Image (cartoon, rainbow, N blue to C red; front, side):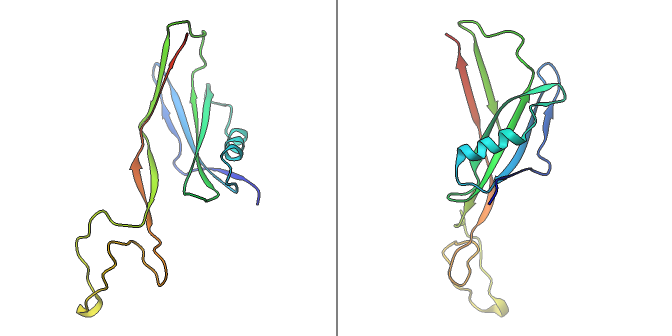
Length: 150
């Protein structure tokens, strides 16, 4: 199966001002290898966007053992001068991610059809005849990096 890279709907986050930036989100599928997913993303994401240059790309798996990856390409201004000894740079992102859960955090109530007593599923989500399917939820993600130049 070939590796495919598709930009997510509503993926573009763009900022303006003294330090303009952009971030595009992608879905990569067709490989279980993170380096292959990253290589495919770097080949697909544009090198520049509206005068901003691509600063970097990263990928993370959408689920354990799957061939689906979430990729991000970040854009910013090209550095006009190299960093000097003693300088530092910081980057942070307060975006969101997804997590697959199979158990509810809390159970409020159960209702059976026609007043019948429903089975006790122990808080399992998406129970089928022979498995628990669960669901995907959005969770907060905080990424921070700090670079010091020696």
